[in-house]
Image 1: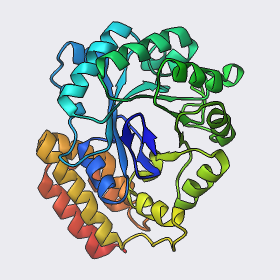
Image 2 (image 1 turned 135 degrees about the vertical axis):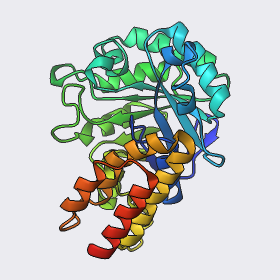
Image 3 (image 1 turned 45 degrees about the horizontal axis):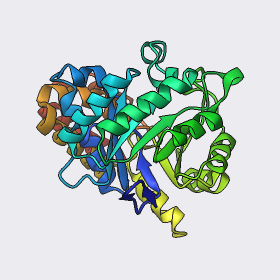
Image 4 (image 1 turned 120 degrees about the vertical axis):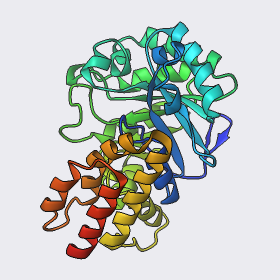
Amino acid sequence: MKIGNVMIDTKLALAPMAGVSDLAFRTVCRELGAGYTVTEMVSAKALCYQDKKSIPLCKLGADEHPAAVQLFGSDPVCMEEAAAIAAEVSGADIIDINMGCPVPKVAQNGDGSGLMKEPALAARVLEGVRRGAGKRPVTVKIRLGWDKGSINCVEFAQEMQAAGAAAVAVHARTRKQMYSGTANWDYIKAVKEGLNIPVIANGDVFTAQDAVRVLERTGADMVMIGRGCLGNPWIFQQAACALAGEEIPPLPPLAARCDVAVWQFRLCAQEKGEHIACLEARRHYASYLKGVPYAGYYKEQITSIETLADIDRITAGIKRDLR
């Protein structure tokens, strides 16, 4: 499949998730089968102001290709400038625009899914980003619409295609739903049938079988996995087998899963320093223990991690006591 001039030889993408899909986690997911990755969303305004915390969010791994940087904002001029900065800093193959974030402080400011209420402005934003991105393809990530009474994903996606979008990713929920309820994949199918550019399916992919089902149901070109890979980056490996018609491998033993978690946190420490990595580990390590019997004691310990040595000590305990 091609997105613009970029060849992507996978059907499995890692979704951009704020506070989750940093370089460390993307590296782990890539190693386990995510063939296309997207950064956390980066504020266009912050890039234009040369914010020291935002510029590193654009950094890709040495071999992280094909990959995209995702920007959010609603000022076409600022978005154009930010796209140029992001392209230069990251070397990304693709620039993606977030037109789907449902978080109130983003959406109610007219950014993210707020742009779905303003298709003409969204088109100008896209045109600006295309200018800033140079020859890089520009994609958009959208939702079904603002709420149940204003679902406009098909018409909106068609307008984005007309404005030059190279692909559209659809999270099959409305902005009002946030992450509740059920994703309605039938709308992704309708978007796919209404466009002649690639469509990426997103929403409620929690198992390898879900990845197969969403592609079969929608006819989408690729599946983008978000919350389903939290604490379970092996879902990409499993989904790749399922899509190839092969037997789905089981999860590795808990000890091996813990080793991957520790690897993620050490990669994070290399990029952000030990203190930040430990704060991140407090949020992420418990995800790796989801569904593990009798893990409550260690989940409690995880909430007070302060050093990499704490991570090693807790991991040794988990390996000793849990299966």
